Amino acid sequence: MERSLMKGNEALAEAAIRAGCKCFFGYPITPQTELSAYMAKRMHKAGGVFLQAESEIAAINMVLGAASTGVRAMTSSSSPGVSLKSEGISYLAGSDVPALIINVQRGGPGLGGIQPSQADYWQATRAMGHGDFHVLVFAPCSVQEMVDMVVKAFDTADKYRIPAMILADGLLGQMMEPVSFPEINPDSVDKSSWAACGHGNKREHHVINSLYLQANELEDKVNERFKRYEIIKENETDAELYLTDDCDILVCAYGASARIVKSAVNSAREAGIKAGMFRPKTLWPFPVKELNKACKNASELLCVEMSKGQMIDDVKLAINCSKPVSFFGRTGGVIPTPVEVLEQIKKIGGKI
Amino acid sequence: MTTEILLAGFGGQGVLFAGKVLAYCGLMDSKKLSWLPSYGPEMRGGTANCSVCISDEPIGSPLVLTPDILIAMNGPSYDKFINSVKSGGKAFIDSTLVDAKSDRTDIDCFYIPSTEIADGNDLKGGSNMVLLGKLIKETGIFNYDTIQKAIEKVVPASKMHLIENNLKAIKLGMNY
Image (tube, rainbow over all chains, first blue to last red; front, side, top):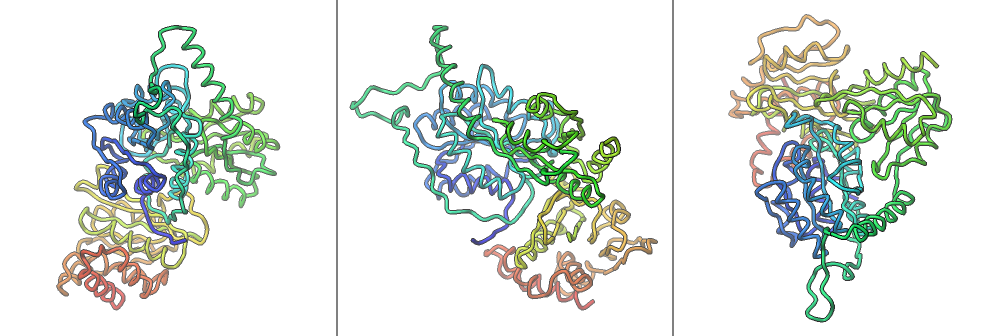
């Protein structure tokens, strides 16, 4: 397979086109803009639609409209722009419409900064909009994984009729790495049972809607959705376990942080400290079983994030607070260094 | 082993382009590699820099803080990064634009009047490639054939005439 060199943002776009995405709606924002620019250049040649909307809110609602017809549709943005999309994402979830949203995170809150960050973990996994719902959240840590996860996200979203998000960050979006595109067959999920794709007077029309004024009816809807969530939790978790079989200290990190942690874990091993790494590839559903397996022999966990500590909540919940979990993070766009993480590992190692 | 390279200079000097050439060299030689540009406010008028990692193993953090190899194309970049070079590392400095000389004895500093060389050979803007030529000669990280293939890959088809100029500048650097 031929390797080419691509920026993460461009690889996300190319992968989406290859995965059969036919509609892209977006609004530029650093550090995600190359994704929109790539789509502007390529999408029409691939027989799809690229449209730069007048705002992020318009873009997500265009996604809702397009995806309602059963085509693969997506939008992308960075943190402040994703906040603007949250209403539309809630509508997607409430209407059971699958679509892809990409967040190339930057520092916040507010306009924040434009450097890489992981401070939107809570937003992505807890509160991607109002109401009782979840979106699938994938967390790539390399340009190749960005490609693979776009395909996976579209397929899984279609399978369960649920919006999916790729939670990346400015570092992954801006960096170039070798990447290869596997032969992609866009999953041919049959959407004819629900999509509003024209009926030619041959069947009842399909209604895409998230409004249910009867409380019982809405409760039934939400309950049905949560049954689906249980199936997703059972079947769709994914994680990387690195040197976890014999580890004393398990370091948990996702996305770009995990790259830094892996370097630190390798250095710790060289220094005789039995460290390992747990890297969730899906943040929702969180890989609970995988984490419990990874920390079986560990006496302490360390969570490393580019935030003030958000994923650490899921780590504690997943192990039911059965072991001590400490935290190290940098925020505001500052990227932690392998040396800093190694110091934390050594500190914990000294106690054990 | 991972070789960490930091390239720094003014926006417009071709810092990111030179980094891309190195990254493509890694691709040509089937190495693991990463290329990370600065994309903050500094690239709008101030110093631009880019991190390139070349390795046989998977690359952890793509951000280079303590380079094995530094290319410094202007004074502010030299001042900012010269002391971050790893002991035993190498620095390649455009001495047309950087007056300072480092007193570090634990690294090899190469002062090349690369802007002057490029301008004198009718290769305006080729300072980056002159430095790159010197870099591959002194470090042996890639050979000329690899860099030739890389440049052919990086230069867009619409600017084919630039390939020759870039290669000429590389050779000038190698022979300096």
